[in-house]
Length: 149
Image: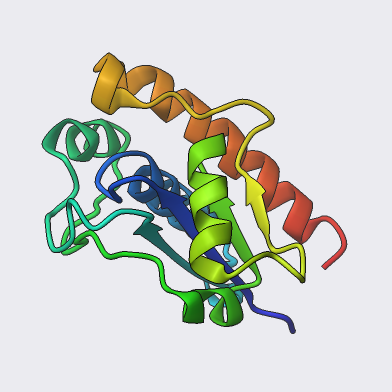
């Protein structure tokens, strides 16, 4: 049985990408599919490396019974391109930077979570909108990856 390896990526790895990471982890556990997924998140920048998930993002996850305890920001590396089946960016700038870090996207693994940018709460302080975007994208992704498997 194929194990889906997914890396969510945003600018700092303290808001959007960890929210998506832990939402998808929660969804796969609820679906009884945790053993079929390897899910992580990373940043395109070095600004937040080693920092925990931003407190309002942690609180939003916690409101929905999801813990992100122990998660600290890390930067995406070129090696991640080989390690993961899908590298999912939160916005068009992340996607551009992900391709730069990976040295291109010859296998078509880099893609957006949604057809639009995921709301960035760092600037808007609207963690509800980010929650909704991440839940929508992760729900669609889970359905896409499990429909035929």
